[in-house]
Length: 255
Image (tube, one colour):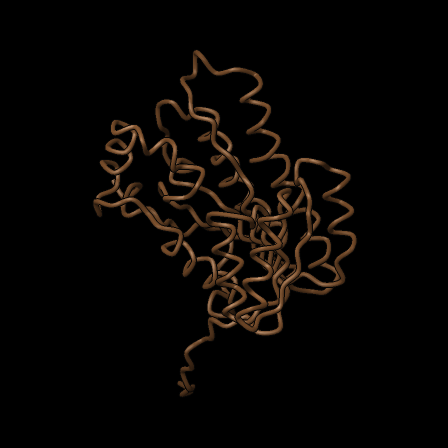
C-alpha cells in the first residue's frame, strides 16, 4: 500500500470566471458576492440594470473584479448574444427564477407561462450556452438552483414544484452527458429563504407558520445559509461531485 499525503482541497476559485443569473438581489446577489470573495471574476446578470450595477460596484469596492450584463434571460436572442460575447466561463450559477403561489384549480396560463419560461426554458438555455463555452475550454461547473420543492410536493405550489422537479432531472441527465467533457453539473436546493421575493408572503402569519413548521431546525433560511454550498460546489473541493443536489433545507426533506 502506497502512502500518500492528504491535502485539504481548496475552496478558492481564484482566477476563474463566474456568471450569476438573477444576480441583482436575494440569493443571486449573495452568490455573486461570495464567489468574488473566493477569488472569482464575477459577471452579474439581470434584467434590472440599477441592481446589478450596484452589486458589481460593491464587489469592486471590496477589491474584487466584476462586470454587469443587463439581460432578460427569458429573451432567447438577448441571452444568446450575452453568452456569445464571453471568451471564458468557468462557473455558471443558474439562479434566475420565480414563484407565483396559487392553488392548482385556480392557476392561470399566465402564471404557468411565466414560471415555465423563466424556471425551465431560460435555465435550460443558460446552461446550454454555458456548457458550449466550457466544452471549448475543457472544463467548467454549472450550479442550478433547485428547491426543497424539487424533492417534495407542496399544496399551492404545483407549477413551481413542477419546475424545480425539472431542474432535478435536468441536473442529473446533463451531468451524465457532460461528465466525459470535464463539466460538472450540480444543484443546490434551498428551503424557504428570507429574500425580497418571499418577504410579502411572510407577512401572512399562516404562510410564515406553515413554512417555518416544515423546517425541523425551526427557522427560516437566510441568504448566507446557501452561499457555502454554492462556493463549495464551484471549487476544487467538489471536483468529484456531479449529478446531485446539496439540500440547504434545515431537514425539510429528511423524512
